[in-house]
Amino acid sequence: MKKNNRRSPKSGILLVDDHPLARVGVRQMIETDPKLEVCGEAGTAAEGLSAAIAHCPALVISDVTLPGRSGFELVQDLAARCPHLPVLMLSMHSESTYARRALEIGARGYIMKSADGDELLKAIHTVLRGSIYLSPAASAQMLEYMNGRSRKNRTGIEALTPREFEIFSLLGKGFPSSRIAKQLNLSPKTVDTHRERIKIKMGVETCSQLISVASAWIAQQCMTPPIEALTT
Image 1: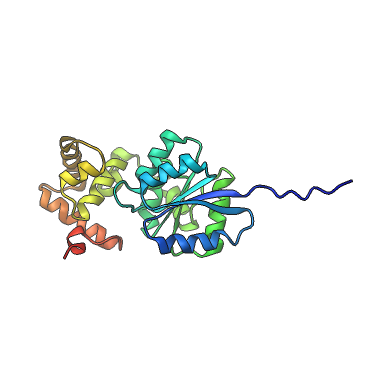
Image 2 (image 1 turned 90 degrees about the vertical axis):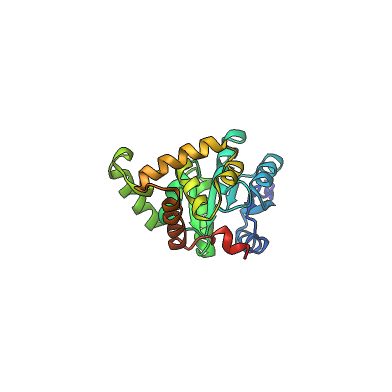
């Protein structure tokens, strides 16, 4: 009987990150696995959506912070255009807050950029099998969250909806309402409405107080510095 030497096709991975060197590092880790290959790369959410439609990957790996539309918005865009395409978020941002948010908007996993190659490959294969991947610490936090109080009884950041959380984060980075509206494709009036709700949930009375709280939270998370710091 003749032996079949045909190899199984590799699972294509699309990388979305605005830092080329970061994509190189992830690509190198992925290509150590004979069952995986990088089928495309993109630097923005818009490019990522186009590449996903063009290349039909088995999985998208996306950073949270991207120029223009965020990685979270890319997850939502992909859900509308490619509903069966899973997304794994790979980011430097704290998983204690961002992992839950990622799952809420439809991502299938969240992993820190500080993870080693073995953990990244484990996360990729977990998501490709149809399961959700979180680190043990993030999984424990998620269970606590699920077993905790209902949203209506939560306060502070935990009470924010995904959209409110997005606006809160952008306020903390120094974005004015007009730029937030443009980036999130919302009307300025809608942003103002969200901002008023955020003020109530965060227990502040003025916009300046809200921006101060948001900026302090951003700094605590070791995230991207406020926009003013980038332009000075």
